[in-house]
Length: 331
Length: 254
Ligand SMILES: Nc1ncnc2c1ncn2[C@@H]1O[C@H](COP(=O)(O)OP(=O)(O)OP(=O)(O)O)[C@@H](O)[C@H]1O
Ligand SMILES: [Mg+2]
Image 1 (spheres, rainbow over the protein chains, first blue to last red):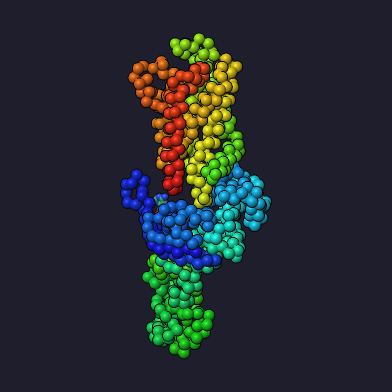
Image 2 (cartoon, helix red, strand yellow; image 1 turned 45 degrees about the horizontal axis):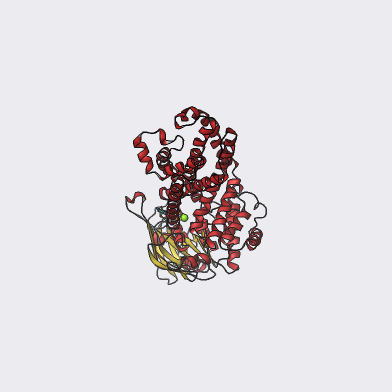
């Protein structure tokens, strides 16, 4: 549905003075039909710029892309007809109602008046806008507004939908509602590309994700694949003083254990000194729940009795950390 | 035809928003009324040297100038509305659709034209009791000229808004253009009162000719060279302004 190669964009700073901002330095992505694909990255990573390029709003400086079966550079008009795009900040006028916006949006896609009115009615139903949809948009709550934006983005039934940070600033129930709507669209056969800087969103909503940092894709795959690449699950052992050498000695040879290393006791990566907590022996196993009993047996046979066993499945944050050297959540 | 249909679509939307903003309408009506009712009486004596010996004469000189100023200023300041829409993402939402780019501009500019023509009609009607007389056909021509002026001014304003990009910057830019343009057009006081050098400068200002054309029409002199010159100049200038602004609209991406 989308294939991009080396997509680039830099913005000249105002007045042409200063160095240009390299917003996107080379994006290679493949999005299959029927996927919910997540573009995950911190603020300023280039998510919005990437989406705007793919939605024909910004001309790329370099690179190629085929979007919904049409070449982005050669046939932007065809791309435009086949896609829907919902901007990060939405785009409704305060003085008009959701229904009026829906009709207008359908009409702008060339749909006749009667059909546009019918579709607006259907969309009001499908996105649950009935309660407020005939009030002016200026009076909506954040969650209501987002649902209207979503309905506007798909009024012409595109094959491919771009959503730029669809749940940013929403409370958990509203976020869950938006996710529900996105899943429903996918079930109807739509391909959805969402950008987000929420780990849970990438993890829980998306089939596949591309992690973007400083305008480049640093990892691409299903959330599970990416987390697996961190070499399985992490187990932290807090040992009695003096037990560590013995434990390392028996654990290192085991072929189902990898990466035995000392880490700060606060669950951070090595190098980061823990805040007063005892240092732990960190090791990775393929599947912690099944490996744990075995692990304990081996330790016991060697006369090592762990004080504490901590078990943590790697998160996308670990993935981001491994690929970029810094954590994603730095708010 | 797609362009016409899309323009109509955008125009309708803009009108709807305008109707829903009553404050805007109130200001739009009150402002010209103030000029008409509070400023014009001063003019009778001021315009005496230009041959105004009665209120009717004063209004015949003053009203066409006021209308031209309204069209020019109203048009030039409409870029602020566009900036608001850009900020709210409304323009971007239209730009992902296949809607005609020129229509996005024309629909907005035409709303401005219609609003200004309604204002103008109101002013003209209110001036009638003071003795203003104008033949309907000439009034129609005058309004054509006004419409062109407004379309030109709002296209320029949209273009400037796209180029400049922010409220803070657009204000001074528009003011610097609007002030000398209006003064050099003799909108409020005819330039016949001005020294020679000022009149020479005005000769190079197309808006001056538009105002002269308006005055000739209100004076009942449709055959005056100023009339056809004004129409031709304004038509050409408007076409240029629309083309320039539409090009920016299609290209500038914000
Ligand atoms: N029109 C523009 N002019 C100049 N710089 C820009 C422009 N648009 C984006 N940038 C810069 O490009 C970089 C990437 O911006 P972008 O909006 O794509 O990030 P993002 O990943 O969407 O961030 P966020 O999560 O905050 O929305 C930023 O450094 C931003 O300041
Ligand atoms: Mg963004």
